[in-house]
Length: 184
Image 1: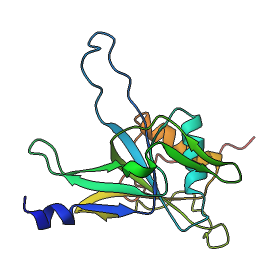
Image 2: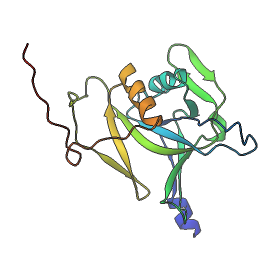
Image 3: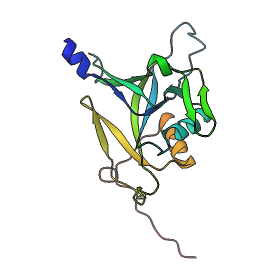
Image 4: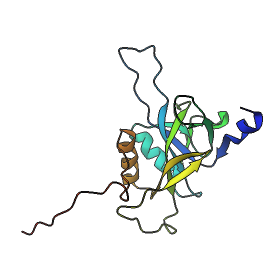
C-alpha cells in the first residue's frame, strides 16, 4: 500500500462511534477478544449523536469516539476490507452530556464499523417507514447498512439487538410470510 493509498483509506469524520464488546472466553483468558462490532452515528450538529451514544453506553456499549471519529480501511486477505474506528488521542474516553459537560469513560481502543446510523434534526425528519427498503452507505469501497433513525430509546434498542446478532431483512429480497386477518 502506498502513502497516498494509506491517506485515502483514513479519514476523520464528525460522528460518534459506539462498540459492542464481546466478552473474553473464560477458557482462554489470555486470548484477546475479537475487535468489537460498532455503530457509527452521523448527522448534523444537535441531532443527538452523543445522546444516542450515551443511551448505548447505558445499555452496555463501549465508547470508541464522540464528536470526532477516525475511520480507517483495513484490507485483509481472509476477509473483505473492514472499516475500523478509533478516537483521536486528545478526546479518547470523552463524551458530551449536553447540559452536564464532558464525561470521562473507559474507551474501546478500536472497533469494526458494522452499521451506520443517520440521525436528522426532528424538524427535518421525514416520517418513518414501517418497513423501509435496505439502504447502504459506501465508506472506502465497503458497503455498510445505513439506518435512518430518530434519536429515541427505540433506536438504542434496535442497535443492541443488531449487535446481539440479529440480521436486517430486506423486504424487496426476503418476502415476509403472508399475514391472515383473524376476525373475532
